Length: 166
Image (cartoon, rainbow, N blue to C red; front, side):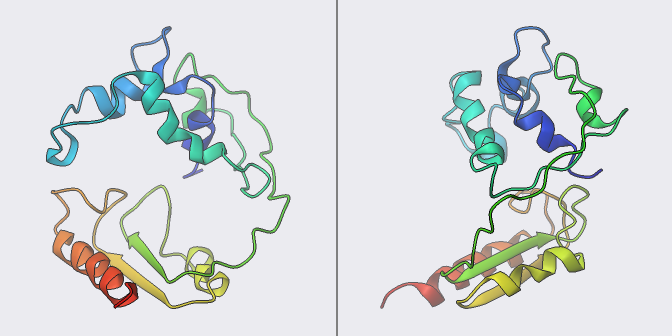
């Protein structure tokens, strides 16, 4: 249920619906013109912002898609109505990650649930150095409102420094 929004993100045109002012561009970006204090957003149009959502559907055979349940988030936002469906399993095994990996996790994230056993098992798919970083925050680990922001930024910088060529 926590991943119902995936179905919305892969709906063609979901970033800039002309049918409804509650498009993702308006809801997540336009109404927050300077997210995280950034002066230049880089997203001049809904079509530009749509590209940030494409990664959810970039390699569908490598990603499982959760089912859409009746009455779920995916069915509450017209014109994004998506009929209930069983979702689909991953079709092709993606293989191992062969680069040093920092897995950042907000333990209050209600969408990703990244500190649950199935998510923590990501370390089993990394062949290089793996670092787990858990912060006391939600989905937006780099938000200025995150009380653990220094821990997160220090962890990112430490990971980069540790794995950068000398």
